[in-house]
Image (cartoon, rainbow, N blue to C red; front, side, top):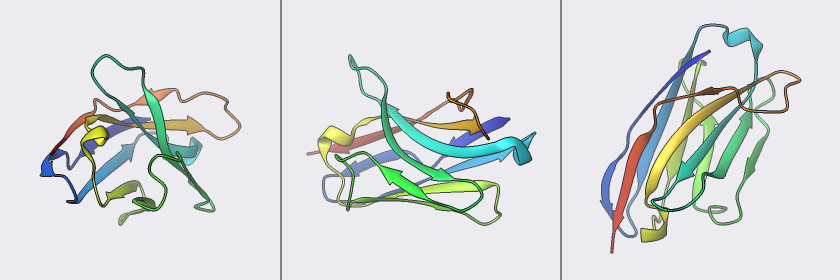
Length: 118
């Protein structure tokens, strides 16, 4: 599975951005697509995930109520709508795929930078 992210950029606090992730390759093997982020000097952390079949979602507490993950159009895309952005949301955001029945995310995109200014 290959993943390509887009949509990052610079935004002021309180603003919004929409990230997209396009999956290609063995799409039928995907069970879950997730978004992770890594800020400078910090470990990579989970942001949100969505089931590829039934679109069940889950979010980190830090983004609940502000971020929304959804299947895009076409269906091999996953979007992350980020509203009410805060400076602490600044990070490189990565899309990742976990195959059906898998325990780890095995495929990762190259990442897209999100910078939120105060």
